Amino acid sequence: MIERSKNFLAGEFDDNGREIKKPKKKNTVANILAGMALTVACSEEQPPIKHEIGGKAFPELSNYGEISHDEKSEDVKKKPDLELVFDPTEVANLEEKYGADHVQKATQYIRNGHNFRLLPQDEKQSRLSETKGILKNKYSNRIKIPKFFGFVDDQRELQQVCSILWNIDEIKRRAGKKRPVHITPEFVIAAMSNEGNILDIRGQKDQWESEVSGFQSLGLDTFASNVDDIIDRGLLPKSFKEKYKASQAMNEKGQMVQSARFVSKGDAIRAFVSELAIRQMDCQRHLKQKNIDITDISEQKRNDIILFITYIYYNAGPTVGRNIINSLESANDLVDYFDRAKNNPESINLKSAPANAYVVMAGMEWMTLCGIFDEE
Image 1: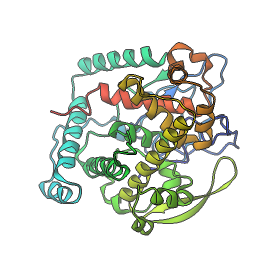
Image 2: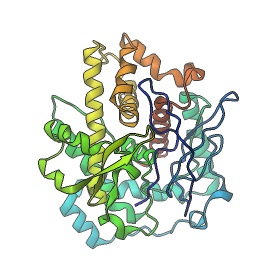
Image 3: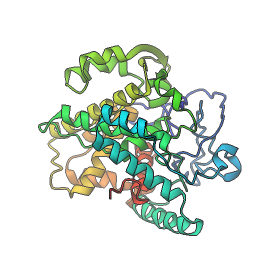
Image 4: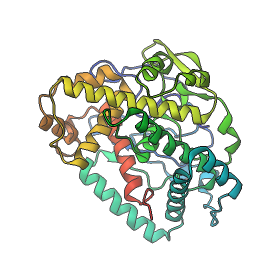
């Protein structure tokens, strides 16, 4: 388990989506991992944000820059193992727990990631440059993406990937056809990374059954307050209340919130996916109340927008999300709002929840474009 205080671009937001300033804290960085150091570049007029990082996932970033090789720990500099061997006993156990289909997909994704990391340097750099160009064309030069990642490429991550895949399908099953949920593995992984939990375990396999702080690791600040609503809407069983203990924490607003400590990482992942789903349902309901029909938007654009708004609802809360929806009058307005990163980047407040959402979208698409989620 890898934890840090809150997401690395911004913390808590007011009802307009602006970051609430908070007192500086002393940052501690140990055993820096090569993760999703996705950042939004500051304009010349915008001073760099002081990041609050309390764990191992990210180093201190200045001016939203990428991590330099000199800043990485010796552990990160090590070359990946040439062998990718899945333990047959573990595979059999995971198939029994998550189903053979999920295990097959998880092993394929990890194999894709492993193969990508082993590409010859010139070929890898060429593909990364091409990917970066595509993303910059879509999100402008204010978005920076990592040059490599440290997850979905190691056999020790198999259970985590299986858990993510199973929980996505379970949430979709529980939501049903009348309440369709659009959540993808790449979106969940990008969102998890932005909230502080990274898949790269680096020998921490034994911690799978260790207690996990939802507040520190996954931004589940108010899970204990929200869980009854999630259960009432059928996205979690009543028995899930046995999988966590409520815990109080103080957020960046100085408010005491009811978060949770989960029995295991698998339970935390399930809670995280259920929260994403409930926030997406809130978003869909608010769009309907506003009479904004998104069915005429092209499928790919519609899916991008839904995930973008879903993360705003999750990261900053439904009040911020609803205020954004209420500021719009039509589906075209919604498309224009999403396309600001390309068409009007200077209009984006770099300390806002939407800025965080663009970071998640870029990270999600970066992994996809690099072929991590290709299926043979």
